[in-house]
Image (cartoon, rainbow, N blue to C red; front, side, top):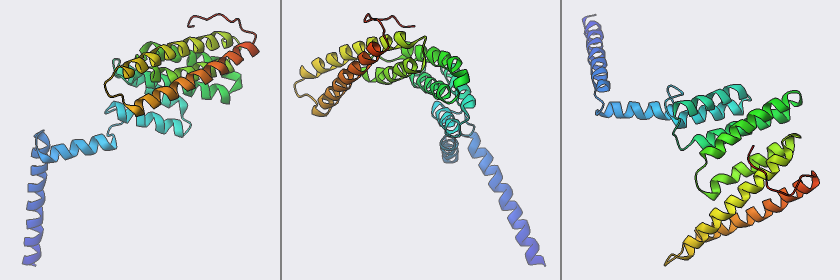
Length: 223
């Protein structure tokens, strides 16, 4: 009996000491335990709005489950919490894609969703980086809006052509910069050539859409 009591007493003392040590370590930001705790928290996203990465994961999780309203709300909250983040363009593009998907799924509210898609596509354009690759998805989104919207069809096909023109200009600048290097990166050169081929193919496809839709040949301003 005495032995069991001593074991229980020893266990209680050990547990108390352990708890005190854990609390003290967590209060010390430089302790190993604090570092591990922060890593686990960030990896597991506790809470979900801990970082941009965690909120992106949450947004993707909602989208996968078809909870589009919550995915959009998470994306909007992310851009509001981190207004100057370099990821804003991606978030706006993701929200645009979400509204396009909803427009395809719900014909009764398609125009409402397309209006929202257009709004966030415009925000993505304004936050886009000065890179031809950053404009590639915007071209695809603009064409999709044109495909689905009767009122915006010609305008968005025209906007797609303008984006393609800008992409070509930027890609050619990158190609010229690469050619001036003493030892050009062959992989980067192939990547630029592939992008230019994509631009040419997309330009033909959008041109065919413009012609088939009876749109005027002139360039349209963003809208």
